[in-house]
Length: 508
Ligand code: GLU
Figure (tube, protein in one colour):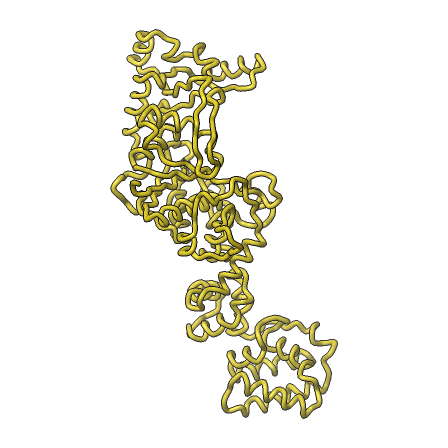
C-alpha cells in the first residue's frame, strides 16, 4: 500500500467547531497510526466567504490541540501551495478536459435566466429546483446550443460556468469506511458548477483535483458532505480513474445534548457552553464566541472527549492519551449514528485530566491564571506544592484561582454566617491562646500544628471537630479547600497566626 496521506481541508470562514476538530483528530490519528502524513489544505475558493484571520486561527487551534500538520501552507511541503486560491490556474485544464470528453459543459445562463428557470419549476409544482437533466436542454448551455453558437459566445468572452453533466438513471456504488456499501442514484444529483465565471473552481472540482495531485489516500470528513460524494466520485471516474480515488469515511454528526439535530454555535450560546475550540472574534461585529481553551479546558482533555464522541476501543476505557489513541484508533470502530454532546461529561474529562497530569505540566497554565488575577508568583516550588494539594478539586483551570488564592493572600471576606451560630467565648479564648502556642512551634510542620491544636482543645475540653470549621474559615474565608492543617503549614506560621487574629476580631 502506498504511504497513507490524509487531509483536513477547512474553509477559513469562522470559528473552528468541535466537530471540525474531531475531523482533524480522526484524520491525524489514522495518519499517525499508519506512519502516514497529515496534510492541511486551505479551501478558500469561495472568495465571498473569505474572513480575515480565520486561517491563522485554525492553525492556532491545531497547535493548541497538539495536532501538528506534516504539510500545510504554514508548514510547507512537497505539494505546495496548500491554499486553493494560490492554485487557481491549475484547475481550469481539468474542467476543459471534462468538457472535451463530454462529461461537462459550458453554461452561459445569466442570474436572471436561472431565477426564471426556478420560478417556472416552482409554478409547475416541481419538487426539485435543481439544474439537472430535466431542464438542462431548455437552458443556455453548450449541450443545447450548436457548437458554432457556443464558440461564438466564447469568442465574445461571454461569462460562463462549467457544469458537470450527470447522466440520469445510473447508480454509483460507493464504499464508506464507516457506513459500508452504499449507492447513489444519479437522478437525485444536479449538474453542479465546477468552474465559476471568475475562473475559480468550486469546492467540488478543487477537492477532487487536489486530492489527486496531493496523493491523498484516505479522506475523512463530516457527514454533511455525503450528498456531495456522488459528484466527487463521478469526477474521479472521469478525470483520474477510480483506482486512485481515496478511501472515504463520512464522520457522524455531533448532536445537540437532547439528540435533536446537529450541535450548533447557537445551541452553545443558548445552553451556556462553548462549541468552538478557541475564542473566536467576529471581525464585523467584534463579538467574541467563547472557546474550550479559554474557559479552562486542557488540550489533553479536549482531545480525549472528542475522540470518544462517536468512537470507542471496544472496552469500557474512557481516558486516553494521544499516544494511546494513535495506538488504538481504527476508523471502522467509529459509529454510524450521531454522538450527543454532553457538557457535564466534557467537564468530567477535564477533571480527570487535571487529576492525571503531573504538577509540572499544570504549572504554566495555573501560573498564568493566577497572574492574570493579580497574584504575584515568586516561588514556583511553592506554587507546585499548592497545585499538588488542590488539583483534585479543580474541574476547569479557573477553579485553580478559587482553590489557590488563599495560599497567596489573606481572604478578603469570611463566611461569618457559617461560624456565628456556634461561636462562643470558649472558642474565642481557644484561638487567642492557640496563637501564642503556635508561635512557640519551632519546627513548623503539618503534624506539629495538628498536635498543638488537639492538645489545646483537650485542655479546654472542646471537641476538635467544633474548632476545625472556624479555623478553616479563618484561613480560607469559606467552607472549602484541602486539609486545614496542610493549608496552615503551607501558608506559614506568620500568616496563620495573623489570619486567626483578624478573623477572631470579625467573629466577635
Ligand atoms: N472545504 C470543506 C469544508 O469546509 C472540506 C470538505 C472535505 O473534506 O471534502 O469542510
